[in-house]
Length: 136
Image 1 (tube, rainbow, N blue to C red):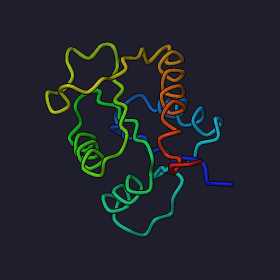
Image 2: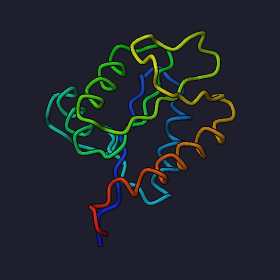
Image 3: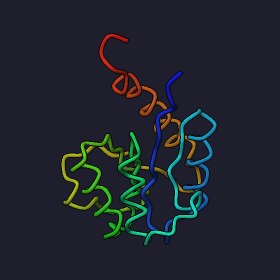
Image 4: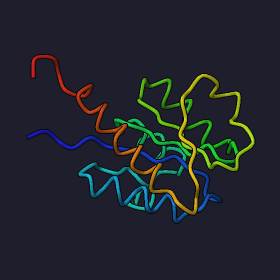
């Protein structure tokens, strides 16, 4: 039996943590492995640990709310590695950073994130066959 796909959630630490926690729990409950700083006791510097988690992840969910430079770097790093990335952004955001122009993103209401969470779960599920080697 193969290992479950893994996900990294890139988010600014100033974002509504409750939404990030709800999304993380939903991903775990669906059987995915979550690569998270909260779940590691890494002795490496935080930036190195984050890059390692992105490298180990099959998917990256990135909260672009506020166009945080750290999140933008993580998205660029993941794109460079060819990772599947799904940006999410709070509905109140006036515009998404031009650095991710052309990427489809999912708006969400931080008071009612269920619709976004369900979309993320569906998005990941649809991409899991991409992880299977040919002929399986």
